[in-house]
Length: 80
Image (cartoon, rainbow, N blue to C red; front, side, top):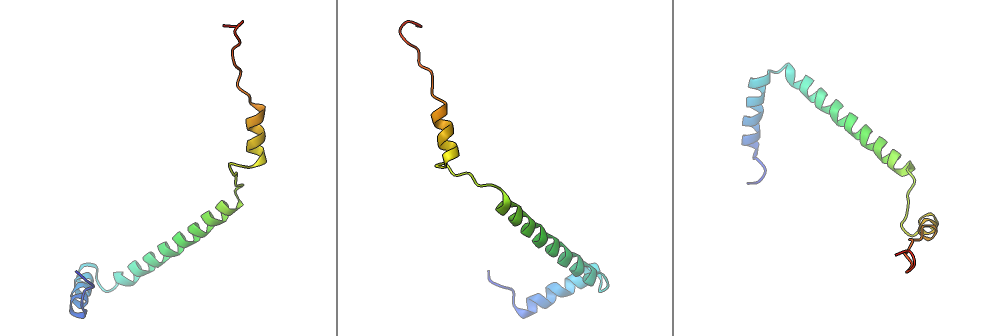
């Protein structure tokens, strides 16, 4: 199953015109275009927010200092 040929595309387009009418097709296309435009704008906004967020790396000084300050307490023989 590949791409539809020219004849098949004409039949599909004719069915769409019969179902929706010639007046509604430009409105549908305009709505789809606005939806794509809004989607792209939101994706760009998400990318900008993600770039501004601070990045923590596992080997950074902040993580290393937190690990050294929290030493586990072990029981001694007298406490047990």
